[in-house]
Length: 253
Image (tube, rainbow, N blue to C red):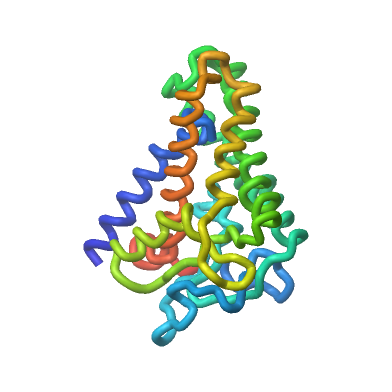
C-alpha cells in the first residue's frame, strides 16, 4: 500500500510537470454494446488475454480527474473485437473534442506560457491564445494521425490495453513500451508504426505554425522525442489510475 501511495504521488507530480510538453515539445470502463472505444481485437496477445482469475477494480475511466481524455484505454481483461475505420475515427474525435480535451489543452497552454516555452508567442491573454490554438492543433492532428489514419493504413489497434495485475515495475515497463508495440487487426503484437510515424508527421506539420527558430531538424527531433515520451507517460498514468482511484483517493470507478 505504501508503494502504491508513493507511485500515485509520483505519477500526479510527473504528469503535471510533463504535461507542458504538449506545447514545449512540439505536442473506460465497460460500455453498452457498439461503443467504439471497446472495439478491440478478441485475440490480442496481451497480458490480459488469459487472466489468472478476476482482475480487481481495473475499470478504465473515460476521463482522468475530469480533465484528461481517456477514450483510448481498454479496461484490464476486456477483449472486444478490432475497430473499424469508422470506429477509430469516432475515438479520435472524442479524444480531440470532448470537453476534457479543451480543459487539458488550457492547462498545458497555461503551463507552457508560464515557463516561457516560446517567448516569441508573448504573454498575457493574447499570448495564452497563441499557445492555446497551437496546442489544440498539435493535439488534434496527432490524434487523427495516430488513432485513425495511420492505424487504418497499417491495420493496427492504437488503444491502450491495461495489464491490471502484476508488480509496479512490470506494469510500468509494459505501459511505457506500448508506444513501440501494439496489436494488429489479427491480434498479433507488431511494431507501433502508427504511433512513431504519426508523431513524426505531426511534429513536421507543427513547423508551419511555430516560430521560425524551431523549424530546424534538431528542434523537430527534440520535439518528436518529447512527444513519444509524453505518450509513454500517459500510458503509465492510464495503467495505474484505477489503483490510484481506489487505494489512494479511496474512490471507486
